[in-house]
Length: 552
Image (cartoon, rainbow, N blue to C red; front, side):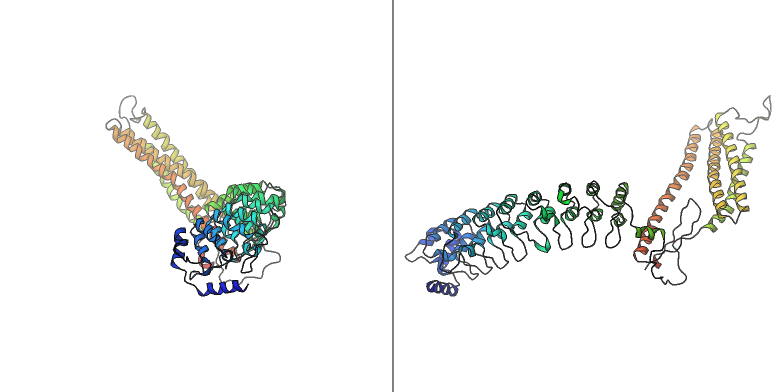
């Protein structure tokens, strides 16, 4: 022991390694290591970072130097020596994935072997560096499966060691997807299931989508009940990561049959989390689970349907949820229907006057009902006159005297029919509007009459255009056919424009509705009681008035 202590003191003092020794270890040059009458002793010096010659040889993967050092007296003292990071040569060999060097070092670590520094085999095997990693941890972190298997088979107690990051070997093996190592640990006796942030090997296997999920559940079925610091089990994590294949496997396992509605710390079930993923496939997988409850609410009182946002993807998700029977929470229904909650909330004091989000447009309806008769009367007057002042005039002699000149032309017949239709429709619309103005106190009658007369007036306008086009055709077709045809095309463009205009208005209205929903949702989320709606009585539509100034 005294001799060993002296060696340690010598090594501590000699922090600059002999250049020949360093070069030989770095380059793997055995001849340089042995040349001269007094070759440098690898056991008596180290670098400024506390690396011995064995550390350097292992770092650069020179097994020939390792073999040569093993033949020197007292070389075993180098096995447990650590550098400034706390790494032994075995740590460095495992981290670099040098299987052969690891195999060269491990036979010396048999039970009962004693070194001059007093370290036992178990202490060397389980020795941790400054990060708390054993050699097995280092091999697993770098994904060196063969090295990890070799270390485990030599010392199964390594499976129980946990580093400073709370990572067990099983956790690291599951994270890296090293299935053979997972099997070796699970079949080898005692092991740790610990992981960082209250996670465990099953959780990380689910997150990474590893096949180790099946192996871990087969050996440790109760691990299905383990949760992380957010209160989430493997089902929650599979949904969050949108791991469709893993989720499909988990929901078939008996361990998860009664966990489909399990809440996390925020009260969110897997279905709540699935709503946020925008993954239709994940949602549909959960829908096929027995015992799924779509009415479960989280700690904010929201069901899965309530959590759908306003984006296009979330609108599609809402449609999918509704297809399977999802409904809003009772709390959400009451907000949407403006019903008082039980018990009622304290009254909210708002500045006076209280602004409304929706206003009646009855005054605009009445104004339109008074203006439109002017248009219909004008159409009736023009079409009435056109019926007697026909295109081409009348014949002045012969048996057909007094008959229109073009009476036998097809275009003239079309003119007369169009003119008659326009006159009749304009007269009907005029009468309806006169009736509506007579009932000026009844908003419903006014709006209904206005809607009907607007439709009939549209027909009158189109018929008037048709009458004009056919009249031009009759007058010009015999002398200039191209002018007649061009007039028809130009006339046809007018009804196309008129018919497409309502679609443009509809798209604008839809945009206004979306904006309305946005402001309404914002007001509800901020706890502002929305004022009473005022029905305007036209197609049950509500005209939105921008009120963002009142929603702060």
